Image 1 (cartoon, rainbow, N blue to C red):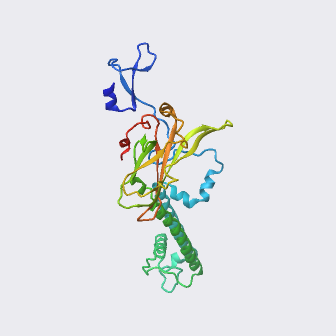
Image 2 (cartoon, rainbow, N blue to C red):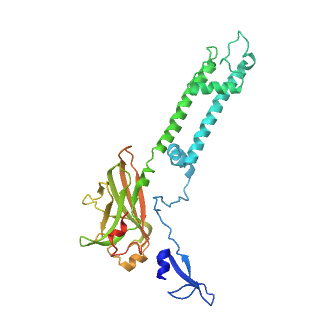
Image 3 (cartoon, rainbow, N blue to C red):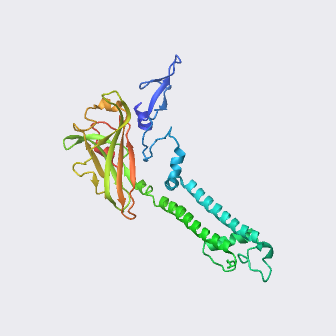
Length: 334
């Protein structure tokens, strides 16, 4: 049994099929070749280790209209494949629409049939079909200006369309390029180099029972004004009988002393003293192993190079072997 646990870890338990066919039952050490390893059922987390919150909104009235009312933020929050698809689709539709407008003007004026007449002045010179109208639009919109196709002064509707094209093009460029720039400058990837310890431990430090974990920065660029906060998420029932499924409690990691302001040039050990003000004060080791809770650690700071504010979150931990009094602090080394 001990050899199996050393090989497969504590995330598995040994079970066997009973002779009576009543199902799978846990077995002790040395009970023969019927033993097999079955993984324990993992508890659903409120916040994953990568910082993603497992929250889905439901029963919200006019949810789509709320997202569309803030269209810019909605586009920024979309995945990259959808951003690129909307980017390409918007420009393609806008280009085809404006090229069609130039072709319609040339068609209604009869420029398509008189384009090669020597003394005739068309609305747009050398536009005699849709491809040439499309090329004219691209040349003017992208300010390429080949000089072969140009607007003449005999076409007031073309001048009005050109002004509309310039305004519409500026709006589309500002909206889409601004969206792409903001999405590329988001500091989510910078947060990937902010590392948390896999496990938190409870041990004695300075004569006090302390919850500890470590955090470190992998990059040489510093985090300016780095600050750390901890939230305890667990269910609670109020004296009035109200059940709170996700009650949030603040864990003091040095707010009163300023220890939550980090100088993150090397891995640091973050400590929460379990005193009379701590939510863990009334929990024993046995009750902590059976309690269902999560500790969410939030690290905020300004990136030195880009002055962006990344945020890394970690959900710690399934209570039991990870949060056990008396564990060595070396167990939380990064």
